[in-house]
Image (cartoon, rainbow, N blue to C red; front, side):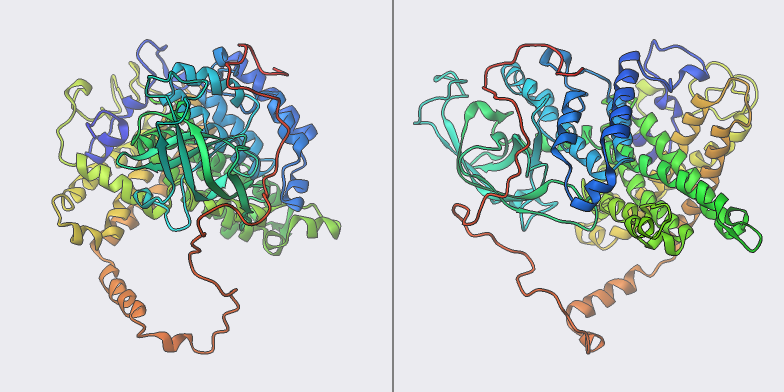
Amino acid sequence: MTGSTFGAELFLGRLRTDLLAPPAGAPAGPGASLEVSLGEEDEQFLSRLREFCLKEVDGELIEREDRIPDAVIEGLKDIGAFAIKIPQEYGGLGLSGLCYLRALMTVTTVHASLGELLAAHQAIGLPQPLLLFGTEEQKRAFLPRCVREISGFTLTEPDIGNDPFRMHTTAVRDTTSAPSQDADASGPDSGTYTLNGVKLWATNGVIADLLVVMAMVPDAGMTAFVVEGGAPGVTVEHRSSFLGLRGLENGVIRLHDVRVPAFHRIGAEGAGLEVALAAQDTGRLSLPAVSAAAARWSLKIAREWAGERVQWGRPIGEHDAVAGKLAFIAATAFALEAMVEVTARLPGSGGGLEAELAKLFASERTWQVADELVQLRGGRGYETAASAAARGERGVPAEQLLRDVRIGRIFDGSTEALRGFIGQAVLEGAGQPADPSLGGRPADLSLGGKSELFGYADTLAYADTLATHLRFVERSAQELAEALQGFTNLPERELADRQRELGRLIDIGAELYAMSAACVYAAARADPGDAAGPAVDLAGAFCAQARLRVAELFRQLRGNVDGGDREVARQVLAGRHTWLEEGVIDASVEGPWIAQPPPGPATGPNLRRVVPAPHHTNEPHEQGAPDGR
């Protein structure tokens, strides 16, 4: 970490809101800082997508049957939804990353599994690794196929999650075999690899035409490969079902003696972790985008219900207890949208520390939003939409939302793991001086005269409203940096025993970034001279709420029960408190906690669901737009 980004500077105690400003050469002025509207082609695509979702997609059907209909998948292909970010030279739409994120927000409001279908293909599926690490020959061979063929990503195995170095899947090179038709027999792309292993929770794997498979090459390390979904030896052994995300095509994939041409290797041998991390980084904003959509939907339902439902002579939204929930949902929905809109415009299209902070913040806050919506709806929030509709009331899937968003705190880096990853990166950069190329100074938060609060030349008319909160961000960032100094140079064992303390500091950083993004986004949405517009109101409300959370996190740094909790946990693991479990009836199905799949070929039927795809070869496709564009 060099102190060259907003997030890095924030953890070093310096507020640099100018780093959230547009690139050099962009128009100046508050309205041009973050142009809310997209380009004409982006807007036209989003319009087609909205029309398709309204007319052709039945979210209740997906939820009921736990399956996205083939007709819906084919329709999404027809309008180019699987090729939003694929360059036009390879047959894709070549639209912006922000358009892609808004597309995820659109489909997610119909059903959450649709967002996962598109994100798994374009965020961590084949297109992104190819664009980042593929050769030109590989791009021309595979990217045109990704316009209509679905891809998936396979990394996790039954006994590994965040520790990929224990991976069991292998890729053994056979240099004596005849080279593939795509390779030069004398070059590094000659010969084949033989892959063996089992992958767990492969999203899109049940319907994927193409898979990105991570495997260990002997004496080289983790390596990424493109594997044909229908290749001999590739078997879907199980289609997984989950608490939420009904319709998600996720399963267990077995690879038994799968022969893969060396031409299908992405990057060098041993570069697989770099490929995986880079793809996840660039796709990190997918989850904040769908989280923002969930929060916006929650706000709509909460507003309508709180105004319609009357108790004790007035709408429940006018009662103070419910008003607090409405304010939290509205303010958080605005902050989540702001984080997506601001972060997506940063260099690197939303990768890096800021995107990780956005993912961490979004997954935690959206879960709270969904929980508050269920509480606000009362018994109707706990009842399924189908049940309510069957007795004649409007079916509102609030309980479904709660189930769907819960996964956000687990996948794409669990909250606990992400705090650790961010903490490690932050500690590596703690204590560094300011980057001279950035001026090495905090933002000017003065209210009078010329201010560079947002990187603008002119003072904003509503500086009083937002600068107050940004002063808090600056002071808190300085306190945060000082606290982090206490973690530098700690022995590994002691650092491990203070994970929760470090996690609180990372949560503070996430709150401060959300506050900064909310203020910058409010500046972009407000009309010049508008000192109290709706966006400014929401930014102010969010910042006021966030300040209370930040203060509480700092308080917990000064006094907590972490040490006592660690001792109780050791006693529990040692079996000292098993007396408390007496009388428990455990109805769990017998079996090992972690199943170890036997080696060899699959013994049962292949459960792979095949969605119709056009005939293909490994020859580059003719350039042009996808059908239906």
